[in-house]
Image (tube, rainbow, N blue to C red):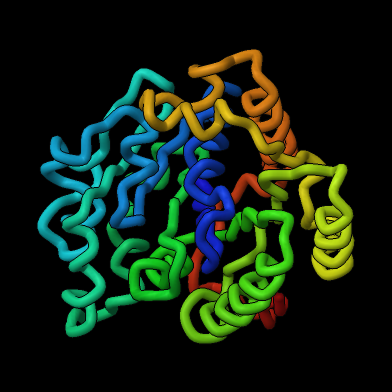
Length: 272
């Protein structure tokens, strides 16, 4: 049964979509079966894999409202990663979901039939707390949190942790923190080191050793519709995301051959 990881942060501009696109591609390059779900109406993860948003006839919007199944919406790419795309139609889903039954768990239900086909399913969540993000958090097993090394990132992080606690208590008792990864990292700045110290105090070994540097090529790659490990295979951005992928896969080595069963937990879930 594939593990589902939501890439989320309520603060925008922290490298969330960049991480979702490039980490998924690098994990796939390591031989894993990977699906990337674009849950952001901006559709940047979709175009980051070279898929035109105008060509999306069935995507995450259709999944959420129930007019398409995941197997019919998945797009194969030349980068070893499958993509469940989105476009601007998804922006209206938050309003349409309000009156639907089980509105917070519709994505989880939609992904269930194809979950066994993948080792990892990454969900690129919107940079806000709405019904789309809530669906992502209810569908996932864990949350990967990209953090930009600046003061305001700490404020956004505290809000996200509060949200995770609420989701765990009310909707998804299995929700765990996959890890925290520092993006746009510049170790020569004192502020960077201060943010790192504060985050490490709170999250401990949940913080990835790999950091993602500021790199022009990381910003350029989406305009060419390629993950960084294809756009510039030997660049520092590609090397960083490949190191992160190796660390990620190492942390997710199988320990229990039995698949986890949702709603069968009898012990009290850990708090964030």
